Length: 223
Image (tube, helix red, strand yellow):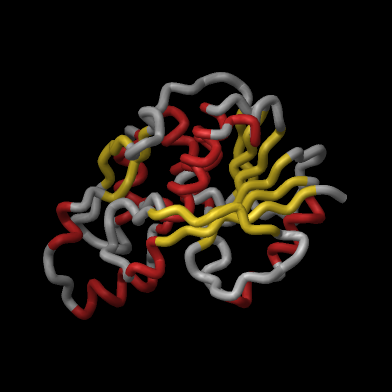
């Protein structure tokens, strides 16, 4: 089975006609992802389909706005990752980790508790024709934690305030952390410091409200 075929099979519990297509991300130096094809998403959904979408959401099938912004940040400022071992936490599609590869990271570890997301990361790495042995897949961060991580990157993982303890966890695994988020308001968690706000939207576009199209970047560094 082709990589696209395998990803399409993962989508069937969500929607019968859902499928992926190879899409080039805007302003990302030609980076491509297998993302949900937007055409089947344009029709009205039945109540049963809405329930299925909520029960079996394929998060890895979207390039979320926060991931897009953080990927662009790394591509525009490669000094963040150049020559470093980088862990992409909650990798989803793997967009941020792949941007780190493009920007010169020594190694990228795609970390996600969803096995399907890890398969999507692998498919997306292959889609971009990267076959060098400088990336690998990893499940739960607490299981066999990778050593010597220089930088941990995380995008769109703080969508619920119940996830805020992750910020402390990140600091336990890397001396430097970059976080992108569009959900948490009144973000005040030293030593995380704001780096700026960037506009973006999720791909395919979910027609989210304007407040979720403003992505904030945060950095923590030092022991």
